[in-house]
Image (cartoon, rainbow, N blue to C red; front, side, top):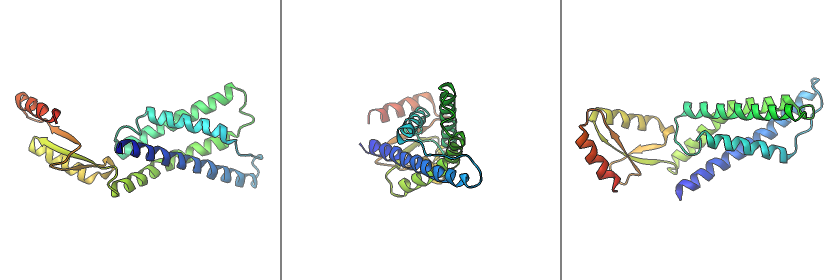
Length: 195
């Protein structure tokens, strides 16, 4: 249940952020009219909801909401999702021959601003969730001592993974398999898979 609440919170915060960027870029585009750009009227909310839904579907497809990636992997996947969405939107407008009634400068400014600010926003949201312990996953690490130590240090230093090394009351088990005989590995797997 907690996992679904966290997913809903992350999706809701992304919807709020993307909607806020829509209005910020609209305001900025209106400012550019004063220096000679053609007049602009903000698109209807129905059009934006379609684009927003497309962005969320592609972010879901990129597993932004279902997997725990480090900052750079998540930034790369979100960049790919937003560039794909921008390409789909621009291609649809050109194929539909309605690109004249839409401001390409608004669309490009919107996606460029989102591409730059979205990873920063996600980082701050995840930091908030990590500090409130809502998103932390407790992990037990067993196996090769040196490899386990390195993994514990990584989990301690990289809070963006939102995992904490514990010895009891864990949500998952990581097995450091370096130099572990196959028999011992099978015992570990059988022991922790039954729990």
